[in-house]
Length: 251
Image (cartoon, rainbow, N blue to C red; front, side, top):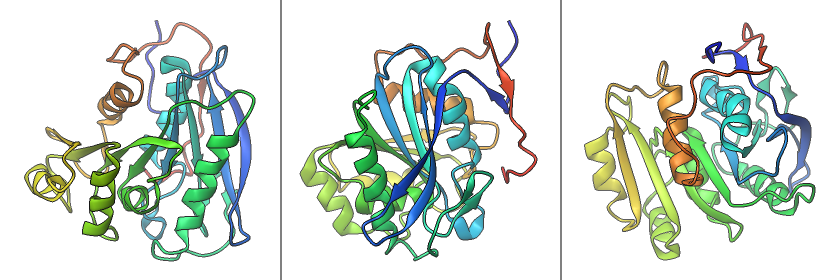
């Protein structure tokens, strides 16, 4: 069977979406659904720092959207936060240092919660770098089952957010690269000790940007949000498969 490569796009029901924030902005997004069944779980993806190239097409997030609907039956909602540009378009507004972005996160969670055809079950927030701060600060919503954090720097979020997650009892997993630029596994375990239910997973050999480790990351994410799905996920695909134009992507 042909291998699944970095720019492989597996079948899904994909639809562009526009998220509307409570402060009047329209955000560019996409929902990817399993091609032939209802989803078993839902990821709301929060991308890395847009001032440093983060966007809804940052490689781990786009690979989640390209693969997980077909391989794991997971719905993937990704979007550009305010002022962020990607190949899909530019969201209205301007980067607001994790302040106004609270409305962006709320709009995405609300979209997932009230999507009707099909219903989007078991909503999880998946944050990466800056997106982990947004997840910790604004992802603790009644509609959310838990959060998975990729390379959390704990830059904008603080002890009060960790205390709130601890009190909630909701699932929280931090996937921390061995060679992260900001927070490495030993430090992460100290910081997340404030959340008794938090799981800190050190990933050997990995770096902050997860280059070369996307498959490992997706397996770890699926284990948390849809434990009934077998991992590792297939690395080959015997069926329709497109190739994305990734020339415009950074990473």
